[in-house]
Length: 349
Image (cartoon, rainbow, N blue to C red; front, top):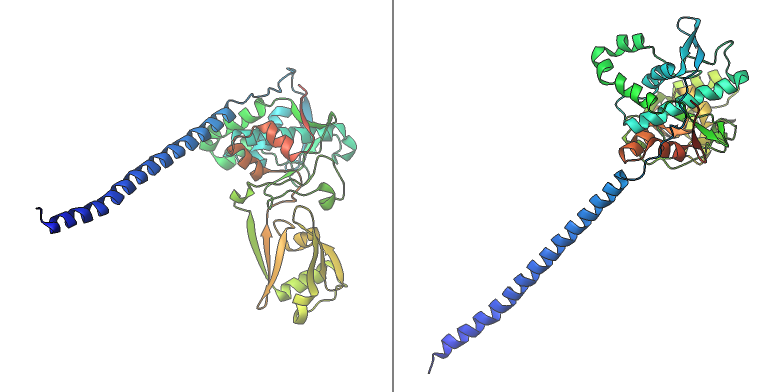
């Protein structure tokens, strides 16, 4: 007869080993299944991206005519210059958007800049320039830099690396403009939204059906997405009194004297009460040179702190938003249609 201790030890061994073996096998099967699922998801993701890349590209180049010449008032020289509109746009695009941006964002900007010129040309009464369609001053029209100015400012290496990209964006959208009901729009644009653009009537008092508030989720990559302005209570009160001599505020209860009443759809301050005055966020932005009218105010020690989001007026196309969309694979006309509600692209020449 076998030793009962040996039999008992064998049974104990089996009781321990079998669950371990089964558990190990089950774990391996689960692990393999999980890996296979991950591979499947990865393949499907790559497939979706490939399909996105292979989507049909619309060509808006339907007309091939010579580009018109326009009269441009050079505010630096104090003279009116005649130039090819496309050549003019090389200088505008170089001044208005970083040449490091995605080519699709640059194309969108080129078309917006061209549309601005055509809009001014067809509305000469509102151009503001005698015998000229546009000027070279960004405060009134659009930023413009001649080839010589760009070379002098940016250097030979920049001209060799980036100027051809600028020309490409303009040349490949030659003659194309943005229209609403077949008329060139007023294509407002700005640097950086605070996550949402503004309705035109809430910022400029004029309502345009194509300048509506839309989400702009990619602006967070902009270096000017957030900013801060710190000013002493003394300077805050002095600046307010310079702009509004009859305002009634003092440093003792300044926190109670300042209250944001409401905001626009895009997030900018609409109305703000300061002392006995009700002002707009645009007023405050102007007085304290803030990057935008989307701000929060806090009072700390003897300072007033503006925490600001976004950069620019917030109406129309966000340039950093366009860059983010381009990086995600959106084409220039998709970007323009998104930021300018209900519009289409039209080829003029």
